Amino acid sequence: MHAAVVRSFDRPPRYEEFATPRPSGGQILVDVLAAGLHPRVRSGADGTHYTSDGRLPLIPGVDGVGTLPDGRRVYFVADDDVPGTMAEQALVDPRRCVPLPENADPVTVAAAMNPAMSSWVALRRRVAFRPGQSVLVLGATGNAGQMAVQIARRLGADRIVAAGRDQRRLDLLAGLGATDVVPLTGEPAEAAERLGKAAADVDVVIDYTWGAPTERAIPALLTHRAERSAPLDWIQIGSMAGPDITLPSFVLRAANLRIMGSGQGSLTAAGIVAELPSLVEELAAGTLTAAAVPLPLAEVEQAWTAPADPGRRIVFTPTA
Image 1 (cartoon, rainbow, N blue to C red):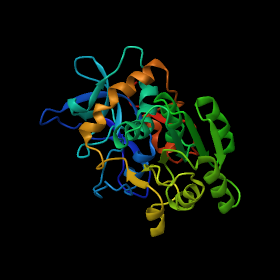
Image 2 (image 1 turned 90 degrees about the horizontal axis):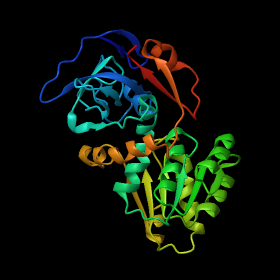
Image 3 (image 1 turned 180 degrees about the vertical axis):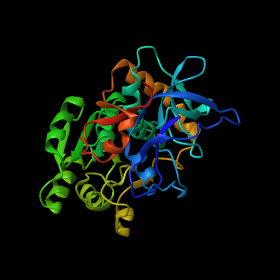
């Protein structure tokens, strides 16, 4: 079969022939229809993701849409110990498959499921989120952040604060459900102050930035919070701005701040997969939107290093 193959962590994958994987232990070989180029895929391909074991060569890709031997179309999440999904064929554990409705577009599903899954699972599994609560999406101008705004609205959030650096993208988020937008531009201290005032009393933070923006945002929100004993669930999902923060100890004593992560390890694979059918239904129904750029897998090397539009997700289509 043909696949995108990584043979060095400092070079993009190349389109080449690769041995077709053989199913074992109940696995099924599917024909891949579409596989998204997510940030998680990039970090796996350059060896920087926290689950990377350093082994090469590898096929990147963590999920996709494919056709089972019986003709059914499914969305699937790949196991960590099998070749990735950016190939003509991939191994699938049937327990990690979700049937697609007939009206579901494979490219849209492949583009949207991974970025949407992060906030969908976080709000439904990591916290007891209730309709009428309020949400801050920190790092709202990326693909996952844009989906998080829509998902918070869909799950009944009464107020959604979207914060990010791209003003053009922030302006678009108002039409997707954001009730307030906060530009994180200009002097960092001033940006944090703006954010603190706008989002002081939210119930949940979905954080895709971490690093310096989070380090400044936490005390800024708590300083302006009307009732510091009211629970504030801070869900760490991404680290676009850096892997670490410095958190003063008094912050944890002076407020009811609950910091947690949402991702592989903090949730079981079964727990994540259990949330996928309902998310697929939302995408098929058009209640959540995503912009996809379909490209032939043969163009993977060029597309990997091309400038990326933060509002669109590249999806490779391996089959003709």
